[in-house]
Image (tube, rainbow, N blue to C red; front, top):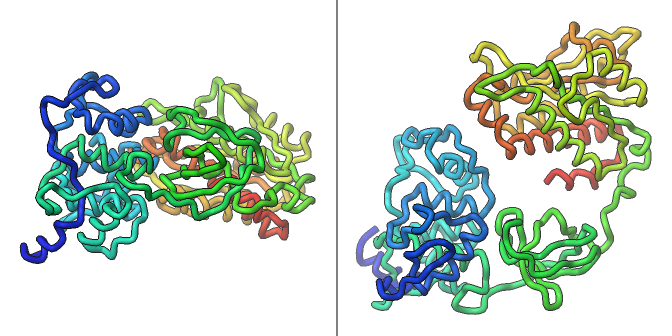
Length: 470
């Protein structure tokens, strides 16, 4: 961009006066935060969005790097920050911000450079910051620097410099970045009134806590009763800014509904109440299952199974688990248990393993009908629906749906039965995913949605139940 054109953009934005050393005060446990940034840094620190460079310093004067910016924004939006392999050759899996970088790229908030580089240690300029925040918070900015500047200034998130310029090429320091990010999150920090509540929502839980920020760590400011109408504004990740009477703050989106009439389980097919689902977390107790890098299969699948069970609690289904703790029911005990409960489908949850060379997601079913388990077609249908959901959610290699005729919980069952092999526990990347609560939750949602997809394909009305796994 030519300098003459760039200069025309500089009148639009965003800085705050330069730091005066005499105005530093203590923020949280930090001793180096200027008074003009005190409230904002305290706010981000409370929610775990901004961390210091040490226990006592925030490094307020330090220029923000691209890796740090990804972490700041990623934590604010509750992106998956699990360290992992990225698309960039200059961001190692062990980089503190690798998970946030990859998540932000997948969301279209950040992008890399030619040659597969992200340049994580490059300094962030004020212009780059404006574009990052505009993308992160969904502001329309026309893809231009001037548009991003205008998006922030019109909302009171940023001001122009004292000399009337934008300073797009000026590096931005951590104190300033914290101020702008806090203003984007919470309108009370902005320099002008710009909060708008253009949506109507209704509380969908018994007692909903309203907080000062988009995380459970933030202070509770009040609570709302079920079916209370609220006015809703901007979203910050999975949280939304709302107002109801004298109460204003953030609530998790999953606890609100879009219609005045509650979407209850009564809207689902009444026949579902007669359907019994058996969840079978594999192994357990004296049988650890497969292992990799210190992680045991029995622990991963139990946690995932419990998460699926929690999702199913909000449905009409009857649900039973073959184990809910670190115990070991034998294979015959598992199938006997399923039959005794009158199971209609049997979903066994596992993690795969090889010699370190295998990777991906696969789902197994019994492929030869017998008098003991004649449900080949339904087993394959259930396996297909769960496999499709797991591949979509985990984004791993699709190993397909496979018939297996030598596995006890499949061959000796009297109902459609499958084994969901989420990922390979002895594959380094997939092990990191299985170790992550975020990815186990995603796998649980996939299994839950796959079960609903199966019942939908069988002609049951289940559309109102999908929202539980959003």
